[in-house]
Length: 298
Image (cartoon, rainbow, N blue to C red):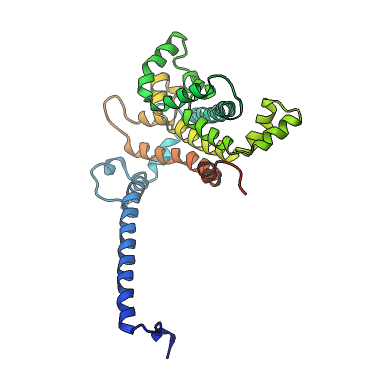
């Protein structure tokens, strides 16, 4: 008897066939459903890519997902800039804000997390509760008071309002993330550092900070993406087009008469995704470690 016709002892061939059919039907149904969901998720991506190669008059109202006659004019126009401003200016401004935000969040949030995790001081529990409570405050609630404050300090149309909070540990989520990671570190490390004569600053810089690298890189990834894609903050605090970020530069494709250059807008949107994707791919292997672990491994 061949292997194809063998069945388990005491099992009739027709029974085995009937048991196999529901599994096959369920597997086919599951895969078809997954393909439908994948098609729905990929449709906007394919539309944007196809739209960047379409003439401006074929983007709106056209039922074609991909262009019948692809053109590269939208990308060539980006080299001319927007309103006589090179697009490199917008990318440079966004990169400055994103990198500055990453440095500020990593340093200030890790210092605050170390204080909550390793230093026993009066009112620590109350301050930690108040910090976590700030997560419940919507951004728009603080918007007007912050704007009035920065206006009186004559800091409007500068990058200071967009960066100052990053260096003052105002992002409670990242403080909490690093705090949970530091709490999982063995206490023996702190005791050994004290025996060697290390103070809190030396312990933080030489021992705790290197061990918290996954949490630091996770915070850096989210901070970079949030700062690069931020639209509300630059829209409120920046007035001069030369200081605009990429998100505000995209808005300039719509003129005062309501006429929009959709082709150039879509092309610049795709180009603006490249730094975020590159930054994410460079540090993606640390992302899962930072979110899933809370201490040292094995």
